[in-house]
Length: 439
Image (cartoon, rainbow, N blue to C red; front, side, top):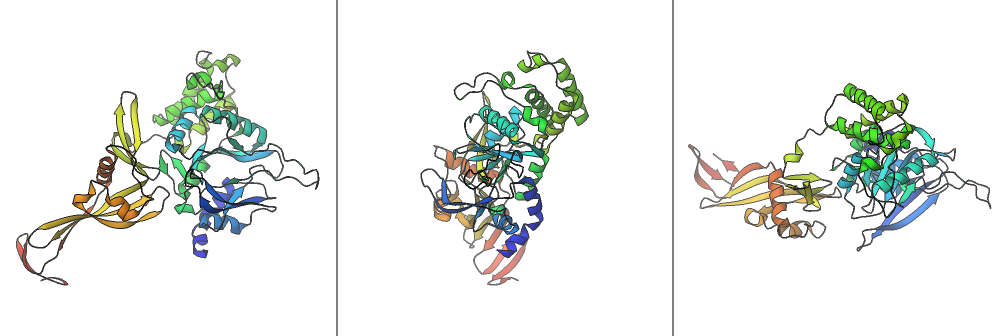
């Protein structure tokens, strides 16, 4: 455990800085079982009436024995510097959720929760009134299609216990990256699972000023979410969405600022209903532009749209063009690649096999296995090699598509192994093969 703690000590200070919390109490959670039907993690939750010691933070990243829970409501009892939308749906598509957040111009960072749901984190440059934070996140949760879910901080003011006279700490939320790089609670960026260091960079780059809390998406109720995003958002959200679109198209920063200033001055009720109130202040527009310059809204340059297969969130995916645009379909709950393409030559014939390595969506490495080339496309070797946890999606062609995806994404080393002894011509030369090599 001590070696694992020291391994993440460099990143620990940044991680703690992101989750500045109440110093009068913290929570711990120890997983004891998983519900086979729902995937919900069951365990022992405990609130401890003192601030989390450094060792608790270190052990959280090191993976045990207990995960750390933090209370976003700060010591003053009325403000927070980070917050979260807690979506308790373990069937959620984290990639789609992230795309929706970008579409709506929401400065949130999505993480997979311990039970497979989503925690959508907001990180602020400075402490802000908890009421404003919670009000904004309730609106944003509804805009994402999840009205009524839990928002942290759950309290906007810390009350005193009438019996003891002591402050009630408030509710805590389980933090991400329990077990660090081996975690199931990882951040997602452009559909990819993030290592701890990259999550920290993304979160720090996603911090926003208080004016970002004014972004509103109007007209959302639990039963009514009709209309385009543009017709529902406030002035801040409308300008933020436009700035993010420009950023993703690789427009220079100076031109984005000029364009957003011009749009703000010229926009009317046809652009956004809330512009009936007039343009935003120069200070608010500057804050919107600053937020849109974050890393997460930078243009994509990897050309993955043209690839028929790709890896995302620790899974293999198929991408195809439809009349409604690109459609991405998951093929497995693991990723894999052919590490070596091996040809065994016994002098009378050749026998080919593939050395395959894989990793579960949780990040756990799978045992490297060797598969006969003739069995590979059927994918029926997966349960034999990796057990029940590695699964393929149900479908007529999912097995063949998964095999094709692995081959498409692999860059195997070619290796020939001679399994006989005696004289053998290799190219233009003759060699005598023996048990330790050739002469």
